[in-house]
Length: 334
Ligand code: PBG
Image 1 (cartoon, helix red, strand yellow):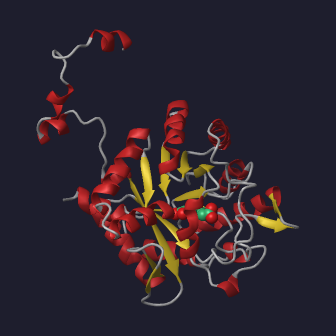
Image 2 (image 1 turned 45 degrees about the vertical axis):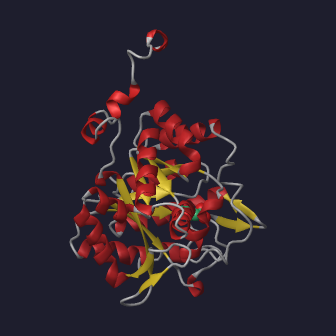
Image 3 (image 1 turned 120 degrees about the horizontal axis):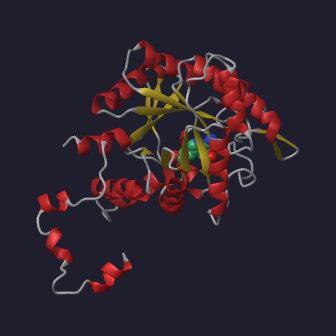
């Protein structure tokens, strides 16, 4: 490779030859984005016929259960393969030990059933974590200010079984506690869900880009402290590879890197090292940032998101969770 570059000389070599025409640029394109790369997050709320906007995420709504099939169907008709469901749990249902996470009638379980019962041809993904359900907003249970690892995992296993029983196609542990993937795998297997894949949030950073999401699911005001004892330090990348290796060893079928834009190197290293289906979560703050820049006229929203999405593909992502999934799918469909 280096020899080749060393012997390559202008004017025999002109890189611009391959860039002259749209068809030529498309012929030599190394990457492509397709609708089947997109995963749409959907926020779910109580109520009827409710489509409540989220101020910090212009263009994104929270949907009541009766309308969930409508948005899932829009995604399905565009060819989006998977939706991720996130609940806005009412304050009165939140407890320190997050019992609502195990309620077979909770929002997520009802949303799962509403999609199945409507016969929509789309996969469903659910977060396994307690933050929407806990009064303190943490992903596990807390004692004296400490997140209890092993005790939390027992609850997460129950939560995952409940989701699978309600029809969830893929469970996604997003809590970053140690050893949860293995335990969840075992719990699923011993309850007849050995075919339910685990998409593990393997490298999830303690990021400042989750704010609008926490606003959307109502944990912004309840969260006490930060998540730095379980989510990763943005300074680290070797550690991310160890996290990914552990989750794969424990039985993860696919992994998620999160957030996206500041962590392209982590996607790249993960894919290079493990050759496993690797997904990236283009998170709420990244979406809000692009929307804000677009609304002030600083950039073109549609062009910007397509550039970002192809950037994730180039880094090695097999798919992208993004709030722009519907917009991107429409653009791809022309
Ligand atoms: C929590 C969870 C978070 C997101 C998805 N699952 C936020 C957090 O860790 O507080 C963030 C997604 C986004 O910002 O779009 N289990």
